[in-house]
Amino acid sequence: MDIKKWVHESEKKDGLVTENFIKNYLKELDNLSNKLPERREVTE
Image 1: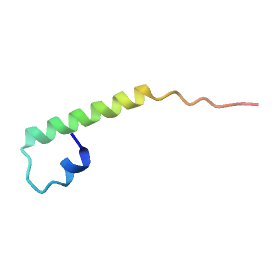
Image 2: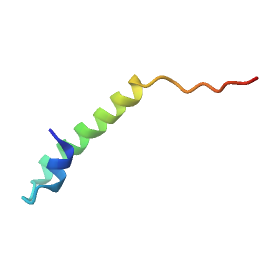
Image 3: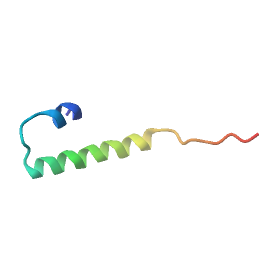
Image 4: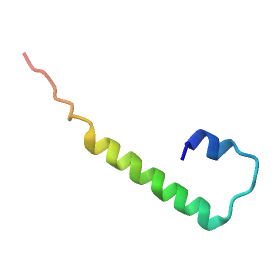
């Protein structure tokens, strides 16, 4: 689901629908951070 479209649609959402959307979005963000490489500081 496209987050921008979902957030900006004018129709009202049921509380459970909103809750599920937020939970799924947070899971996506968690998975994204797991895929990113760790930052390493270079010391000279």
